[in-house]
Amino acid sequence: MTEALLTRRLALHPIGMSDHHALLTHWTGPVVRRHLFDGASISPVQVTEIIETSERDFATEGYGLWALRPLGRRLAAEPRQSGPLIGVAGLRGHEGPFDRGVDVEILYSLEPDRWGQGLAAEASRAVLDYAFGVVGLRRVTAEFDPDSAVSAEVAASLGMRPWRRGADGPDGASYYAADRSGWLGSRRGIDAVP
Image (cartoon, rainbow, N blue to C red):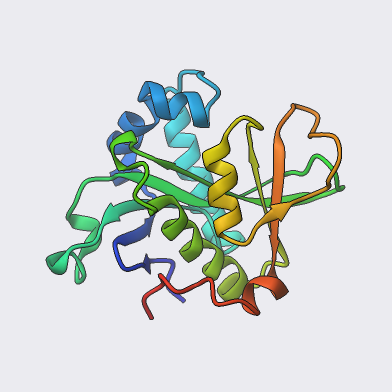
């Protein structure tokens, strides 16, 4: 099993320490930080911890975070060594707000100059294909600010639906979910490259 993923336009590779500087630069950008870390600053030590957690999760759970890089003709053979990091997509376990136990959440971030190109949905489809088809997860959730119409549109384009209708979560967030049977029964994985 390989954790590297390819789509029509992207190469996704598990994040590693060689990505540290690029991740720190990406995640400390004010626009990305506002949407991903609620405006809080992220330190080099925290980036190291995120990378270590992702590496551990890949080893123990089969999933983690992927670095996103544009896929060009010459990048197909060695996509990790070429092309700038333009974002991150992946899965992480977290304590669910509604159920006892751990949920698996999909998350992503993109450089602002890459917004509006469909790359978040493309990367997320590859991640969900992996989550349901390779890892065999039963459900993947998404959490985002209720005023984030773009995040709701991305979630809807992935076939995710509002989860636990009614009051928002304890922190005011909106929750969406996709389940394995619905995902595998659809044709949503069309961006993935075999």
